[in-house]
Length: 319
Image 1 (tube, one colour):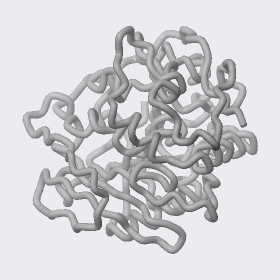
Image 2: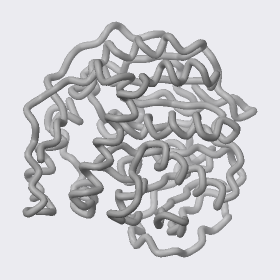
Image 3: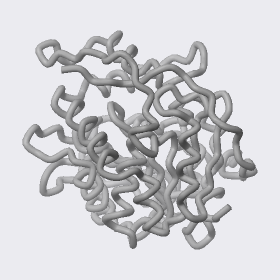
């Protein structure tokens, strides 16, 4: 079986007006992400700024969750993309956890979550599990940010649970299959699983545009934790969800405040396609010059801070 991944870099249109960085990015209240990768089910402390990692046993799979920052602060959910894990947000957490209750979830089949072969990996089912996990944590409202296909799951969550999602931030999330940049397929052999590090690095090459950027080894290791079934199935299901209906069409009918950030040098999705999200009433769309598909790793401070999309009441500020 082959999995198509990414292609050459393209330069998008010019950016919209930048949101001025706030104290979120420069605050002295930064809290480093936890290095506890055990995934064991210990309950997190309720003290401000602490980190807690636990596994939630849902009806159709175990979901690994990590929480940072004050538990009484506004909730901010971060959703990772395909062939990734919650560790992809590690560099962002110190910029966010001073003023937000940051919640990260390993989607089923990824990271430290369960990887059953007999469960659905359809995007709506992944979103449903995310909602159930937030219910278990006692979260009633959250701003939801998704990177890459994590933005697809975030959109599905807003469709399923509009009362739970106060606002959305999509980071390098392709709006439709037409925006995808094809490349030579990367062969994946179930008989030779897990793949070698070099295969994984080839797989993720176009996720980064900055010369000399080194993919963190912990992310490579987490890809190796996936099974052939979970990797290929989740990618196939994301494609199916986009095939059924483009994200801007889905979002336009929801009325959720929306911020779209796109690395201008994205090698997987045409950055010019970010303009498609302008069909969503009130959406703010911004290109990030000099960055590729994964600005949350390449240059975390470059992304506008949460104050750009969250109001004091937990909603979003519309441009």
